[in-house]
Length: 65
Image 1 (cartoon, one colour):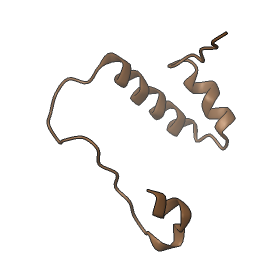
Image 2: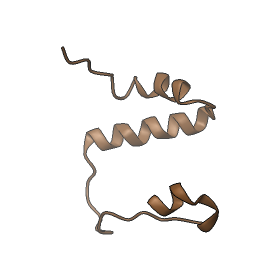
Image 3: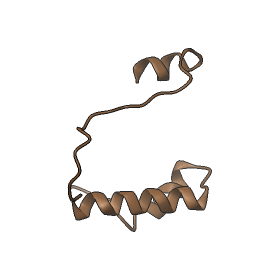
Image 4: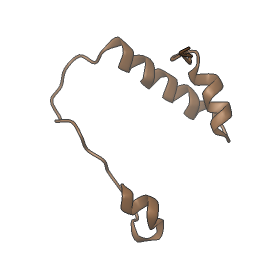
């Protein structure tokens, strides 16, 4: 991943794998992240700010004092 970020022209495609391919039930929390990601993709947002507005419905920002 570092290579792709620091030298983007050196890598054509990248697949990051960190979990086994075992099938199982996903958590409700992860299902919300997937739903939020799909909504961001469908909206074809052009900025992080626009994506954040959508994603706040799925994961509200928590402020710690």
